[in-house]
Length: 564
Ligand code: ADP
Ligand code: MG
Image (cartoon, rainbow, N blue to C red; front, side, top):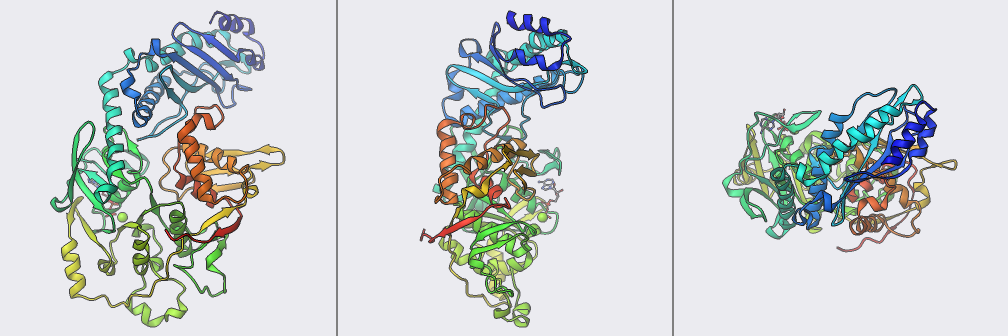
């Protein structure tokens, strides 16, 4: 600590580059500070630092991180607290980023992030500081204020148990543990999703993910109510069974809101989010139409075949997919990665992939229509063990294939399965079911060399918020990947797919991504990646989604579909 003070005095007023001299480690009374990387100038991304508090000082009870869900939850909590304090103690100390203290900003979801590590030995935060400058000269006095007054307040305020609210930590950890418990036990109850009574599903706005303040609380219809004895509480709510579930109801009655909450149920949420006990199986994938997307070597032939240009759809590639081909590719790619729950909203679907009604069947002969609509694909999908939750405002023909029909009525769910079945029986659909093809779930083998982020001899990976990654010479469009929630996940995806460029050829996409996932599980996210605090764990489905949209991706072969 004295050495840092000494250096800062010595370099005061000199050119910014001399800040490099503070790279290294320093011992403070309550923690060690690691200055890993110093920014080149005050306007560059801020300097990368870590603070490590030994457990002797930090004092977190073992109980709070004794298993993986608890550990992730505790780390998430500490990151949030650190972020709050970092905002409070940041100030504009000079030019550019001078005086900033930054750590990743968590949203409503509890994610595994590289920003925080808690283990038996220590608690470590990984964050960023803008080293103070006047113009491009070192501002030594301000740097001293930052390192010796402000940072200690943040680090000690966030990473020492005695300085935190123990009830609020326990609530955070137990909430996540219970949500995980439900997720782990859904399938054995024959369920794919659970929405607890009392949940608040709507969000404040399209750009504000916090709960709507005066919304209608969720209450399960009696016939669908189930209960879970979680480690820390008993919860009752609506269980959505395996099979095909339709969410119907008038426009603006809360159908999409329910489906979106279910889509987010793959993640754990902070207490008070309103969706903390809306829990979905971890392999659920939201499917939508996405015209214009890149598709490489996907077998969409069970949905679409006999294209007018004679193009082979069992190895379908395009620079510019249509609504229906993009949605078909999205389904097949999700199944390829092992998803067994598809979430589909009529609002964002290609109508012609959803249905061809009786009149249209009469006018356009089957031979002239390349598409077998989803309604006729339900049987082969079910054979593969795939469940579907569909939001449906206008397509009553689906009553024939729905196992459970939930009607949203002024934001209140009702079980209308019996009436829907009765209507289906009484008023036959005018359409003839079309003979579906078997679905083949191929496994594509990518060419690792086609995944390069190199431009000349430089590696270029840059996450652009939630919506895109600049990757080598390409831009990967993620704007339609609805189950990404934090930019830190996008950063992580960029790094992870870059690693794949070095993998041995011959492995399938799924093998590659599942090996990555196992590595992350075993070694921890942080140890897989450059030592930085701005990564958050994505699922394999979103990593695959990014790779599938990388326009340089080439598929070498598709392995013979297994009969799963
Ligand atoms: P739908 O898909 O049925 O047309 P949405 O789910 O888009 O309807 O919801 C319509 C509006 O109602 C949205 O602004 C949404 O935020 C709001 N909303 C949804 N659920 C609730 C609720 N439980 N309480 C209050 N408002 C809600
Ligand atoms: Mg809607």
